[in-house]
Length: 182
Image 1 (cartoon, rainbow, N blue to C red):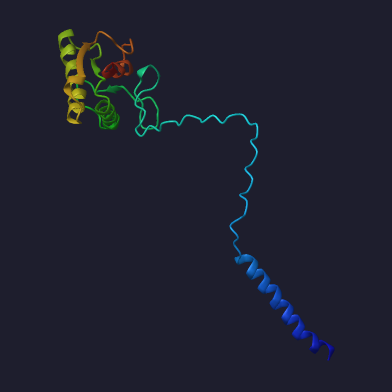
Image 2 (cartoon, rainbow, N blue to C red; image 1 turned 90 degrees about the vertical axis):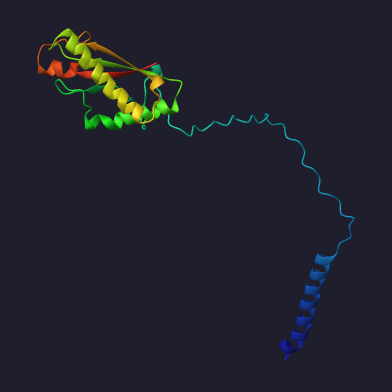
């Protein structure tokens, strides 16, 4: 029976403690002191690093003004032609489109398109064929939205061969148009 007698006392004691916590939590005297300010610590001054500007567009040119593709690799600037032809190859159209994008984004830049031929044919014929090859590249770029004022074309005919050989391999390398940026 002794335990039965202690139960009401424990209940009263627990009620008294709970009431004390409630009253202590609700009291506001308004005379509390503000917490002390932390003491200054001698530290090296913080230097804010400059924020790097993020370039939203692609980097168009590398060292030396070389045009770059979307991945930052040098872009092909030489386009080859079949014998006695001035028709662009389908494989070259994607690279030429990238050149067009670069020129549209950089209207202050211009290009010279050089038309070249192999040694076969007369000098006059090769100059005319080199001009048609340069004009084929120019026509593509203008149709892709590049200003004609940004493009100059010139024909060198057979005068500046890429390969000085006198065989099919050399001739194939000499039938070309080259895009040079200024």
